[in-house]
Image (tube, rainbow, N blue to C red):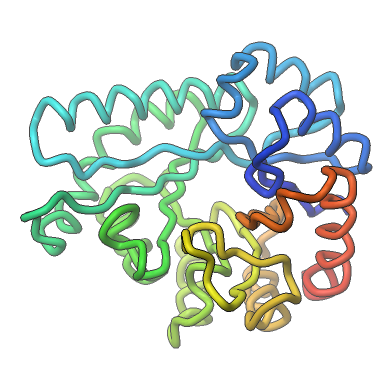
Length: 275
């Protein structure tokens, strides 16, 4: 499955070194890594283990959280994002996923959204020098208050464009954007602008978990039309990795080899035929 990459949080409870080994054992060739998990073993060791296993890193999660209301907090966030860019470079990926951040009480969502392109523009030259692209991820509107004030692909494209830097792009994540009536047109527009940087898949399952963040289902367990969305991505000429990013407690409770086998099977039947 040369197009499939396994996002680390699909196997969130598996330690970083064991996760890397399990993906290689499953016959796959790519992983999406998370900064806090990589920190368990250190960036250098993680990069070596990935290379020794014959894997590549499709994306690093995550940068962002750039919506602080004070100059000091904003400067601290920018510094942390520069560290994230350095880590992405060291791990050999050219894509840093950016979850831009939510709101503090009393902030205006319109003003926060308006400020994002200029903040991204401050980081983009540093990222470009490191060979890393910043991939803005729109998230479902239920996460607008605490995680991402970007809720649609259209908004993400507008902010990426307004940054004034061609290295800034967009993540298309099925879980967050499947509901949007404009999604197919926006996928085409993002690709035409040269800003489609990552395609991530998981399903919208019900009932939602007590923590909605962990409600991402294995493909086929919910309501998303993967043929339509994957076909739209493929029609743009996108040839990059497709990350299975599934935050789901039932999947995390499975032995890692069994969980990987399930994800591979669903990807093979529901996503791969439309790439």
